[in-house]
Amino acid sequence: MSGINEQGRLVRLAEADRDPLIFFLDGFERQAMQGDTVLTAVLLVAGSLRGSEFGAERRAGFCLMGACQDCWVWQEEGPRFRACSTLVKVGMRLLSEPPKSWPREQS
Ligand code: FES
Image (cartoon, rainbow, N blue to C red; front, side, top):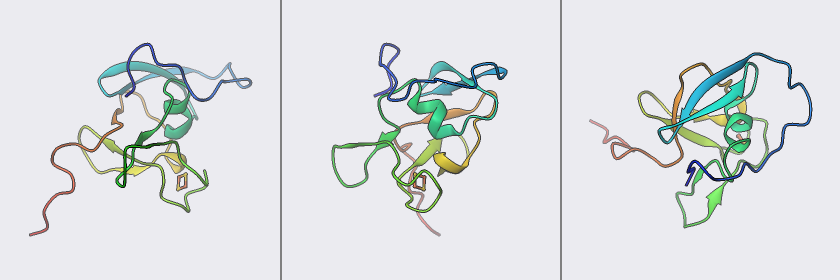
């Protein structure tokens, strides 16, 4: 879904002088800038943010302000979070599809 040759949905037009950082999306090394949200970082390098729980359509967020919950993304380790209200961090390892362990069974 986020293969190495995929084009981003967004194009950075301004603020290109912030420090770069490296994160990983579906195992591929990607570059973002300090201060980017995860949603911005992913959509600059991929056509969509994640798969849908309800069908084959891909999702790219909707409200962009933490209200709609359309931008949940998973990490290789750790909890999922809303991409529009989370800043990307150095070395973050993100997944555009849920890991096999999700959702975890409640005990
Ligand atoms: S895009 Fe709506 S909560 Fe993130």
